Length: 111
Length: 113
Image 1 (spheres, rainbow over the protein chains, first blue to last red):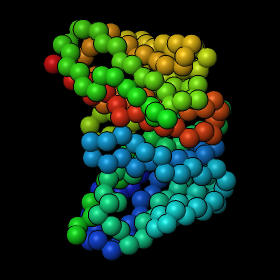
Image 2: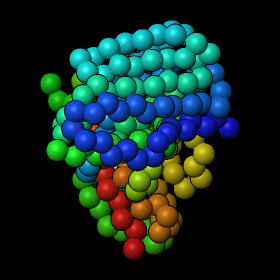
Image 3: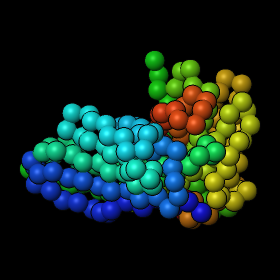
Image 4: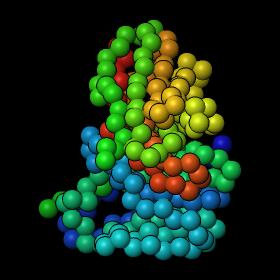
């Protein structure tokens, strides 16, 4: 079945450093979504990517969808303590209604 | 405008019991999906309801069942609870379609003892 993996599993950075998490799907995706989950909270939608090679930016966050639509990345520039949480990608395969969530990357930012 | 609301927020049940979790979708949303999130893992898709029908199901046993009401609210039922069913159960609502943004509720934390 379809699997979505994320690396790294954990990342500790000093405040101000950059951070990147990578998402890889075993199958081609029709679109991919990214979520942030704070400790004790629920996933919050960040963005959706649909087109091959698409790049979207939200302030310090840059999201990219691979050319083959099987991988994606989230890059945070100059991390802040408010960026702490677990970042999940969720891949959607064509012809299905379900999203397969990645394993998540837990980010800790040290002040 | 209320977002997605789930009840109860926390629940403790004994093995073998049955449980019902409830979800009210965001105003205007007609599609409800349920996910199970074990500690330290990503949410796992249970099923999705649209027009009061289950239209897609993940790899969960028949002990997991659901319902959607005419007002789009939904219930998740789990029978014969196992210790392994302990998890955060998330409800996500969206508009109908493949590429629509999902809004998650705060979840119900179920503990089976």
